[in-house]
Structures are given as structure tokens and as C-alpha cells.
View 1 (cartoon, rainbow, N blue to C red):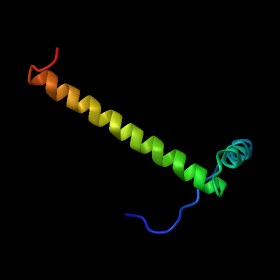
View 2 (cartoon, one colour):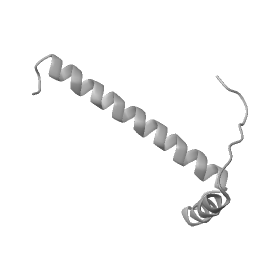
View 3 (tube, rainbow, N blue to C red):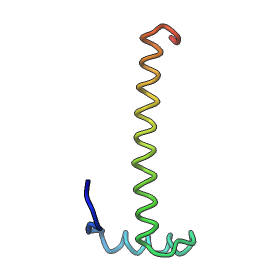
View 4 (cartoon, helix red, strand yellow):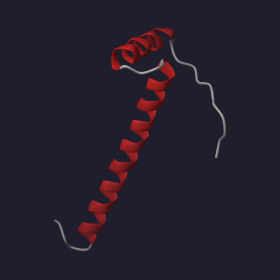
Length: 65
């Protein structure tokens, strides 16, 4: 969909916290940590939606109450 990198604005204090967390976590850069956190959040959110949808389908079929 989109190619290349996009820029986002992050509050200075938050960025400093992220930079410290990246260093503690062994990331090669703050950008790498931010990318990882955002990717994990989006993936987790999608998995939650998928799980809820599967549960609704099973309820509809009468497999669970």
C-alpha cells in the first residue's frame, strides 16, 4: 500500500522514555523499538478480533453457550 518510510510526531518526553526502553531492551535504535511495539499492537488487536469472531460463529452454530 505505502512504500518507504513515514514520519510521525511523538512528544519529546515520550520519545526519551522510548529511547531508554530501546537501550534497555537491546534494540539497535529507538525506531526499531517503536516499529516492534506498533507491529505487536496491531497484530494483537487483529488476533483478538479474529478470536471474538470465531467465538461468535461457534455460539451461532451451537457449539458453545
